[in-house]
Length: 117
Image (cartoon, rainbow, N blue to C red; front, side, top):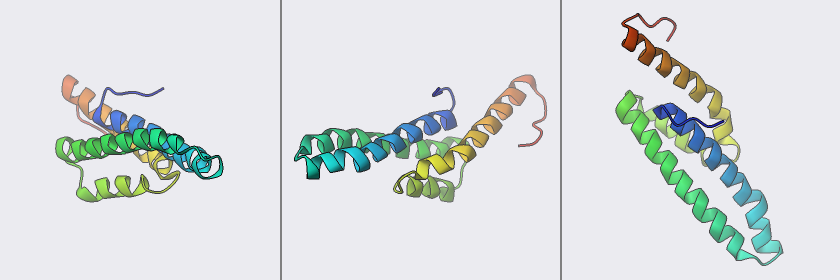
């Protein structure tokens, strides 16, 4: 399901996992903390989510540095990570970007021109 073989594929995978962890934090762990007096749920889920958020931020920076993406691209992705379900709305664009990157790499390896990217 998740691919980690290109920079954008890594970002897509981590963004999806981070988005799921955010939803778990908001809709499962937070109610457990406040309604069932289980603060450990937030500590565990929040720590995992925080680590995934930082990893995603590093992958965004990698995309800016290695792929020459504009800073605005990175800010949009990081802003979407702050909104519940936000990362899922970006997935289609990241998938298309990953496919374009794969075409570029394939064209470079065969020496062909890249069409449609």
